[in-house]
Image 1 (cartoon, rainbow, N blue to C red):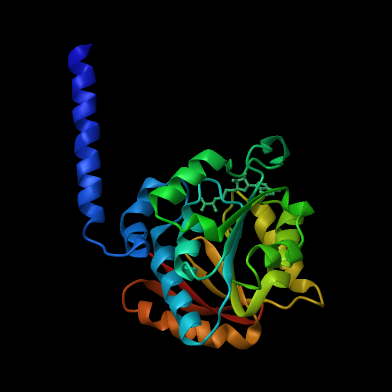
Image 2: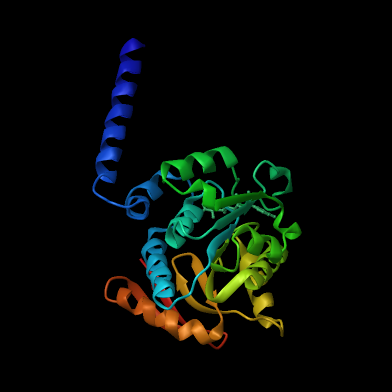
Length: 262
Ligand SMILES: C[S@@+](CC[C@H](N)C(=O)[O-])C[C@H]1O[C@@H](n2cnc3c(N)ncnc32)[C@H](O)[C@@H]1O
């Protein structure tokens, strides 16, 4: 029994040493998170999404597109932490989740946990004073609340809450109304057969006459949307990946899209 405890402790210490050694190879919280920390956070984010998102955020910065980050549906924060680090300490970010109100999680997509999320943000050196957490059902959230939380519009908005058609349409409308001119929306699981509600919601949203956003890329399990006049700009920014990753150009309901998939 004692030998087992000693062995477990030694394994934990060795893992901790290896982890700290891996972190030490990188200089900034963003690089540390992208290369090491992200793997320690529970979630479903595919690795092929991480670096292209950094490229798109850098393209925004070069083009003078500013704003905070927002996510509906954060679970333990795997993507939210990346988005908050990408917009940097100068910008505010807002995380919306049911957290302890899981009885309202109508389709059982993920399970937000505020305590684990807070610990993961601390581990990744996210500037906590720049983050607002909202415990809410996204059906009750207004875009004004999000703009107030980040002191303006949002340039990176992830929609990854409930995966039903109704929630997808609702959350896309919130994202659209919160978005900075030139900002982008990241929608999860459009092509997942486990969650058919998402594609139903997206297609319904795209069909509405007042819809402002169109898809421009599919990266891993994420569908990216922006104002149509920014589609080419973002697709050009993704060109640098094409020698390194499976890729195609296609159209989706008439919209040109770049597809990257590891
Ligand atoms: C798939 S997980 C999110 C994964 C997360 N984006 C990540 O990077 O790991 C879905 C999350 O949405 C939350 N959620 C489900 N329905 C919701 C709703 N109606 N309003 C707000 N959050 C919701 C769940 O609590 C869960 O944390």
